[in-house]
Image (cartoon, rainbow, N blue to C red; front, side, top):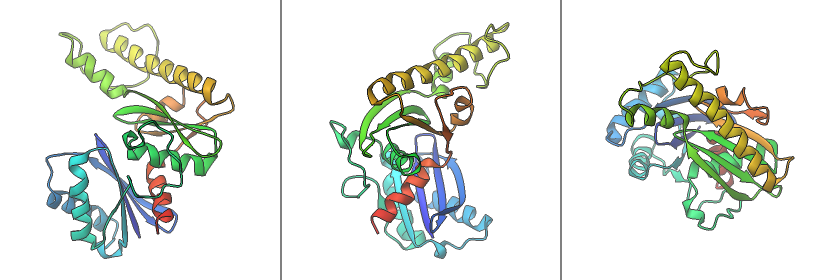
Length: 254
């Protein structure tokens, strides 16, 4: 079986594949202070909860945007599974030309998501990932990664209001019943939710001006399900898009 690990700023997404089928997936908090032993215990317990022995894992692939955690999981792969992990980055074949001015600056998760999106819906396409940051990535009709846009995630925006003001509270992000809030909490929810929907619609529109109006849009990430329901341009929501991309990249490097 293949274990795919997407190490993000907020969570580590973990996927277990049998051939092309994602059989199990989990998310754990991304913590730079955790040791390899601690993450090893977590992985053992997750596998055991589904009756899986670590010996069943025959390959590991990693995408990471948290450099301090990358070597921890590489070592963990060797110690727990006795395999050398593939790490998405220089030297690994993705099958997708990266046309960024500085290709090494593109996050590994963005590349994996773009690879999976092109495999699923073809191009041109726009890939949205609603994570700690919200990323918009453009893929050409030929399957080339062209670049994109990065915006603060909706959770970061909410935290900024709480941390940088004297009286605004920390709130739950959800769709309010009305745009005109009658309380501070409702007013914040309106601004954050509807404001974010507007941001997403506008950036998709601007990218389509350059990529083509026919560009399909696929979304992934934590808040992607909620926001996708509000934006007609988003034709598909795939919560495990990055993990699927990691599987495809692994297969291209076997």
